[in-house]
Length: 111
Length: 122
Image (tube, rainbow over all chains, first blue to last red; front, top):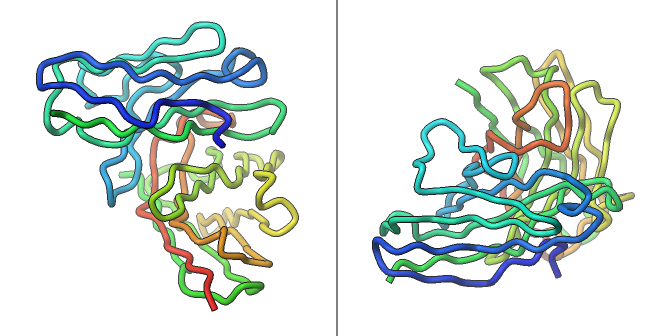
């Protein structure tokens, strides 16, 4: 049972928009800690996709965007491409646990 | 170029010990917090431990507290994870992760190693 809750799977057709939610609590996201998002292609190490709720590292397409509100956050992907098929994880810091926490991960399938 | 290279993984019997190493290069090692994050086969990511840039702050997940010890050798640009009392639940790929913001902790992990596989089995 992950501290941050994500849907196990989402899907969309090429060109469509999908969102992935990440729900936390008052000890992590709701406490004001930033949310980060990672993309993981199976068999490879995770890659930072969004940091500090809505910032993109250099090289990440602007099709990826993040938002945060109260105790939850969302990752949006527009103009879906086949190469976006991967697992996506959210991460934040939890003051009660004194450490980072991850969501359980969401598998994105491009139909 | 920032690089993190894990080593020390392998097969160990339940109750045994293993020490993972993470060799860092391409950045001012002493300035950044380093985390260990693991992923069990077919499962999601699990944060394991953090050592801050100054070594002042060290944190562990409840699942490994009292069994794992994180440490840093500035002279060797390396971070270590000493793992004792291993069980099957510790079987996973262990990633070494550098945080994005220097002289801070709890920020995003912007560089990840390739991972080291630890298998606990009799």
